[in-house]
Length: 207
Image (cartoon, rainbow, N blue to C red; front, side, top):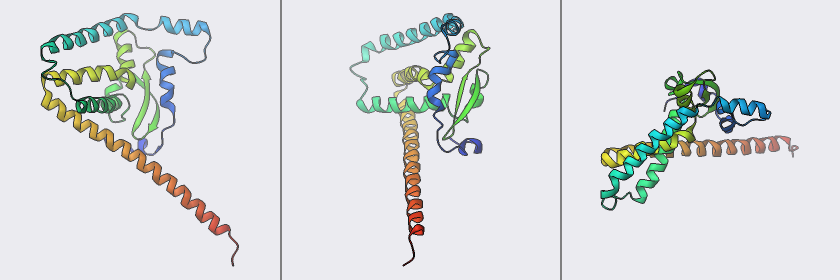
């Protein structure tokens, strides 16, 4: 995905992504018990229950309708691998990509650039109900994984050829991302070693 110059200017992750598990909806952190209790009371439990019901109904429907054809249209190991990698990539694109930030803007607030064209966001603190729930979902890649995987499984059930093509596409993009990160890390280490060698060479006394 293309990225803005602001995001690309920060070439390395800041480690802020690890904070999302503590920052979402005020959970975690080092506050006292009263603060944690108040934060828990603000959680949209009714929306959580509704989302769980929708997910379980969709998942149950998929399993029920797939029963007669499980053996005939069983997923291969290649399908499982592509499904996992594509789910990973789609999840990060929807929840972290700087280019998809306008889609999240009505439900989330910007926090920081993570580097590599990604941003850290959190749900709007003033949001309530389904808006709060949706903000938490689309700002948390781990939360989005089950929903994306469920959607892709439905795709494999009803449009297998088209879905497999999409799986291969997003898996290829994910592989390219990892290659970019690995290449940049190797290049950075090589540059550091080169600079050290040059400094040592310059420090040697002339013969």
